[in-house]
Length: 252
Ligand SMILES: [Zn+2]
Image 1: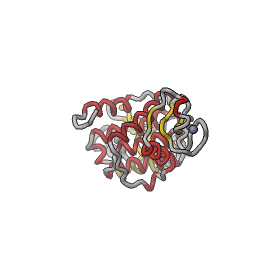
Image 2 (image 1 turned 30 degrees about the vertical axis):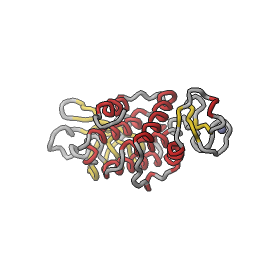
Image 3 (image 1 turned 60 degrees about the vertical axis):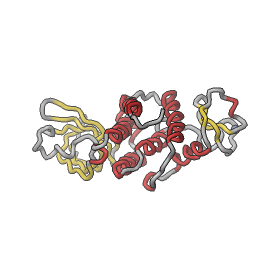
Image 4 (image 1 turned 135 degrees about the vertical axis):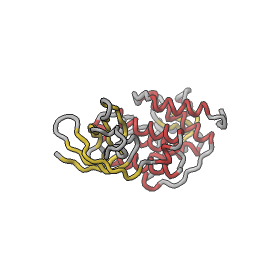
């Protein structure tokens, strides 16, 4: 059967000397693996469209098993992401999360829109770390580990959060703060941002400028929560941390 889809290349593996197996994350069908025959030859008509992190239109045939890519028309190769090692690290992590999930879990039109828009904003120059926070918060229900960021996870009051409890799975208000001695501190700005990231419409993100300490606080919370519950242990995520550790301009 012939399929015409809009998609993003989220993974590629060489297969033999000239072929590639390409994993597409598509608007219409979710995650699809296709064989791109001859795509490693420079003059192949599949070469440009089958590069990692390319957004395009794809035509493939599929029966049982792996499909065969017939046509690949790149629309946006995200060239500014690819020119910047830090952006590339964040973008690789974003698509890696999708690649690692089961096909059943990632076939949602909403997730496709998130990934597409976040990569587009990253390419346009918005802060890749903030975009990744938004993605990580939005992915929590998909991963089956939603956190409570709208109200205090313990008493249910919609008061300002002052800390985040990984063990209780959400923010804590001033009164409930002491219920978890290991709760991670949150400024009122950070608590509000966690809520905003959950509810923001991804096709309407503007520039979000955050102080380094705010970013660090949010990163600590998200990383601890993912480490405790997500079951993901991705090299692409560790690579971001390694890059940050190498940044001579970054305060520690
Ligand atoms: Zn409370």
